[in-house]
Image (cartoon, rainbow, N blue to C red; front, side, top):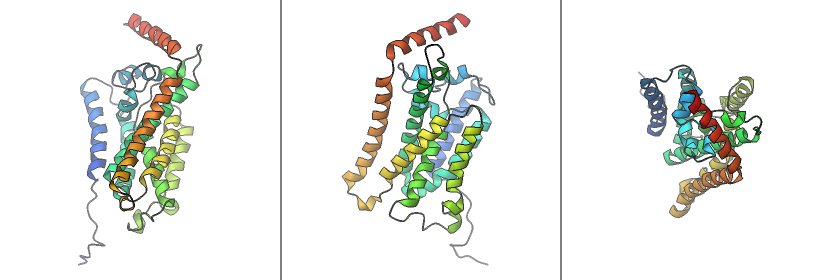
Length: 267
């Protein structure tokens, strides 16, 4: 019997932080289900009520929606697909970069992906056709794309990464990392309703955040190590601030009043 610990197959277990992220997303879906939200095809109104990223609301005071939208999904299929990819990707980031840095990339990347989604919604809207401002953004995919972006950085930045992993687990051209990113982008372009702005924004954010997080802790002093988290937070704060500052607040407030008034009349 071969008991070599290097070759014995162990049961798959999610790292703690990855498991917590998956659990939070599933818990939110179960909570919605318990409160009467459709399990397979929730309405836009219900998603907005639960914190969906409606650009019109996000830009007029509901900035918190940039965060809450990351934990909402458009039904069990959407949730299942995102959690499958998260469970595949996050452990590789967590094992290689560490728990704290993985969480920083996921959360900051998700927030920046939400910013990109709101910005694109505003850019494609006009006073006569504000559809982009009224499209609800939801899902963990922007944050997951940020994890993909950080892994791409890890492939090319020193020190050498992933070398300690078995070859079957090493990401790269031969192991599907680049292909996975390309497939996600291609599917987003081919399938109607996918938030491609969030995907692209998350991927780009992941590359930037990956550059911040890729330097090994031993190469930095304690203060410098903490500074990369400060830099990630500053990047998010600056992006959110710029998004709100550039918005035409008087016009958006007028549109929101009309939108809320119309919904009140429908009740």
